[in-house]
Length: 120
Image 1 (cartoon, rainbow, N blue to C red):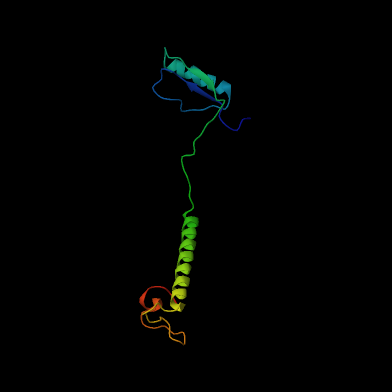
Image 2: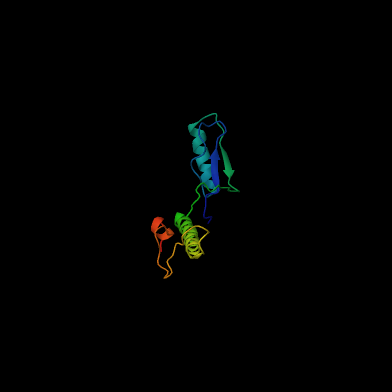
């Protein structure tokens, strides 16, 4: 026995498309006879369904993965910013500028860790 409908009854002059499907040809023929009696003068065709085409109308995106990827990207950028700030703080002062770190490695006023939002 087929696992899906194989026949429809169609009328080219009917106001609506076929609504019922039939697994067996004799069921579709019986339905076509009944419709022809109910609608004299109209033609009813028993049509075998031989191909099926479908379009996927719904696209699913797991936003958790997208969010996790974004969080990893931002964490990487943040880590680079912190590393760059540390390197700047350790670098020798430019001529005429005071170093950002004391000799003992503690931070001075104006250090990136006290005046910006970079975590140290």
